[in-house]
Image (cartoon, rainbow, N blue to C red):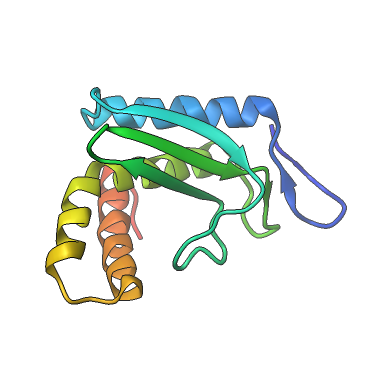
Length: 137
């Protein structure tokens, strides 16, 4: 499993990333995303709106049903990447894929800033995650 580095950050190893990939595919199956081609890859950094402290991210093509989920290999010291954290992180990114057709359509129709929309999407994902993980806030 991941180990803490002298700088306090947590280092993920290949086996951790493989486990994360397995969790992503388990959630995709549970959420009936069978038609999607989902790949998982390590990343040095995650970029995008509101991703200052993100440890994972997803890029997708809704028309071709392809998605790439990225996970950074060094997590902040306050986020130990244990099995539960990896599973919740995987669920979060797979929920982005599940909601992708609706969020893409909503972005075209609504007059929200990308930041406002990102906040609303993450609120919905947080609520769904709590329910699917059977956890309290």
